[in-house]
Every structure is written in C-alpha cells, then in structure tokens.
Image (tube, rainbow, N blue to C red):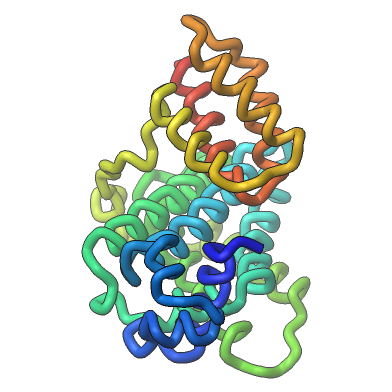
Length: 280
C-alpha cells in the first residue's frame, strides 16, 4: 500500500471517530507512522486530504448509482438495486459513511461543500430518471416530492445501520424501502416540493467530458499501479480520443472495463456520458 493510500485510510478512521475538526495532521502522521514531510508530499493541506477522500468515495458512488439506473433490467429491480447500492456503501465504507453523516457542514470549506452538492445533485438526477421510468404518469413536481421523501427514508435507515449496534436484516430493510416508495408513489396526492425547488445548476470541471479532460483523468490515474487490463485500456482510450471520430462501441466497451475496477469507476462514468453526448 502506498503512503498516500495509508494516509487516506487512516484519516477516514480518525475523522469518523474524532470528527474532522478535532483531528490534526499530527494525529494522522502519528497514527500512520509517517513524517509530516511525507504527509505534505502526498497532500498540500488537510483540506486537500478531505477533498480527495470525498472525491474518491462520492465519485465511485455516483458511478455505481448511474450503473444501476442505466442497466438493462426491469425498472422494479432497479429500484431495489438503487437502495442496495446505498446499503452496500454503508457496509463497505462504514468509517467514511460515519464521517459523512456526522460532520457539521460549516466545518467544511466552500469548495468541498460545492463538490458535495454536485455529487448529491448527480445522484438525484439518477433517481429522478428512475422515477420517470417507474411512474411515467407522474408530473415533474410529483417526482421531485417523492425524491425528497425517499432520500429522507434512506437517511433514517442509514443512521440506524451506522449508529445502532444491533443486528440488521439488510433484505428486510430493502423490502421496506421499496414498499414505502411504492406506497408514496401510488397514493400520495399532496406535493410540497417542486421541480423548480430541486433544480440546482451544476457547474464544475469535474463533469467535463472533453477528450482533454478525460486524458487528464487517465494521466492522474497512471500515477498508481493498476492491473494489466486496466493499463491497456488506458492506452486504448487515449489513442481513441485522439481520433477525429472516436468509435462509440469501443468507448462503451472501455467504460465497461473501467466500471469493474473501483479506482476507475469515475472514469467509466465520464467516458459513458461522453459517448452519450457524442451520440446526442
């Protein structure tokens, strides 16, 4: 494991246990067993470390949710898989989830808060897309109102899983979330939330899908070691992006390769939406 990865994993554990504000760089270096100099070679500041932690996990999560919503399976199964993706995040990354759930937003700088809003908005868009598929007769306001209700349910169950130390039946939680969503979708008649209230313009370089940006993402990933298939996929992607008319089928295949490997899920998401943009 690289020093950078050691710092990331140790920091997440400390942030989850002590909180972000209460955890100093000295706490991190002492727990990791590295010098401050080694820390600053990896990260220029504590804020940059926090930003990378959030980017790493949220980008993977956005990609996972997008994969669920755009998969070629019945919409009813997509809804169950959508909730399963949330619970899977809690199980696999409990320390990060606790940090994210407990941290006071005022303690996070404006750039990081802006990034969180971007990721949350992308997840909202995926869920709204799924609602349009599941409930085609719903108005946009009905879908927006249902979105807020469902997010509230997910948050409550997530907090129960994270902070209540008794055994949880994941299958029963999934069934409960699906059932409650269906009941609200079919029988709720009063909407407070409107589409206009939910509309947040997303302006960020993170979502750029130009060849130059995609190649920059690849270049950053190449600073670490990866499986041979992924390394070869990087080379093919860069070569294809240099073409005047990139082959869409090839790009989709590369996106599928990247989606199977956790560190490249965000690249998969960007390549996938680049191809959609080109086809549009």
